[in-house]
Amino acid sequence: MRIKRRPFLKTAIGASLATLTAKAQDAPPAGKKLGWALVGLGSLSKNQIAPALLKTQHSKLAAVVTGTPEKGVQWREQYGLAEDKVYSYENFDKIIDDPSIDVVYIVLPNSMHHEFTLRAARAGKHVFCEKPMANSAKECREMIAACEAANRQLGIGYRCQFEPHHREAIRFAREQVFGPLQHVDAGFGFAIGDPKQWRLRKDLAGGGALMDVGVYALQACRYLAGEEPLEVVALETKTDPVKFAEVDETITWSMRFPSGLTANCLTTYHFNGRDDFSAYGTKGRFGMKPCYGYKGQTGWTSDPKIPLAFPQTDHFVAEMDAFSQAILQGKPFEPSGAEGLRDLLVIEAIYRSIASGKKESI
Ligand code: NAD
Image 1 (cartoon, rainbow, N blue to C red):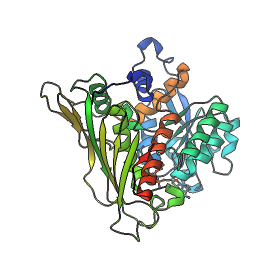
Image 2 (cartoon, helix red, strand yellow; image 1 turned 90 degrees about the vertical axis):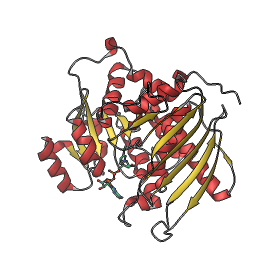
Image 3 (tube, helix red, strand yellow; image 1 turned 180 degrees about the vertical axis):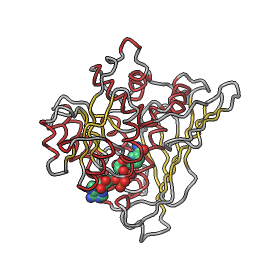
């Protein structure tokens, strides 16, 4: 089948690349930093986001929101925050009167993204929300509507879209450096520990490996393809039905795209080692392994003259500054809520296919 492509800059991810490659004259005023409030002070906030906010050029930590007062004290001491910059989940809405907060970054269990996005938008704040955007496409639509009604931006924490290897891979695909893409194979998973954690509870996580890390493989297929999948067929397997009583453990799925491109994906909470994509064009191949972690991105291609190799970067610094820059410049940010919604639409079709045992349209 002949492969036809939509112009990439018309797609969400194309717009994201355009935002990132904004010319120097578009740069915001030197020294201007937007204030970010972190909601949820768990592992990601503590180990990745707060340290990144010490390195950002256009973003700074302005406040924290936590359900644990002792954590608030620790964070005040560590980051030099005033007492009134620690909010609780209950008094969070008071941020409406806090002009030091421009952006609310939601780093809570997935089921809480929807509520806190709506509350942040009502308080007149821009929202940056961790992946997966929400537990359902319906919630995503409500989050988008709430931010639109408040005239505030909604960004999703798809940090790989700001990582140089991934961005170069997208360029390979878009410019057909290895010919038009015919197939993508992508997988991400790990052996999950503590059986009591929220990631294994359906009410908090919305799903299992697919919602948590499968979304990275799905993202890779979508941003390499530059078009939206039409249909999906999926298989689920569980080796431990007790631990994974509420959520999925391992899922494989295949997608068909309008151009004829196909994709095969795997996600798992059962074993380590899958963390890659391979992309197959008519004239060659390229891929990454490791691929989706915070560091260690390693690329390969079938042509030694065209390397896929860059220095390591801090993905969180890049994505937060890109969001602040978009706000400062009054430009739409991508990946936006629309991008998060597109993933949830595919994820819902994957779960429908598992339930029906049939191919499902997206
Ligand atoms: P975590 O368990 O380490 O932290 C979750 C935080 O939410 C904790 O501070 C916890 O106290 C708080 N919380 C509030 N109500 C809770 C409840 N009912 N149950 C459990 N915790 C509750 O999780 P995390 O790894 O920081 O993940 C937070 C979000 O960030 C998730 O949506 C996850 O998908 C996302 N995430 C993204 C990346 C990435 O690379 N972009 C990496 C890890 C996590």
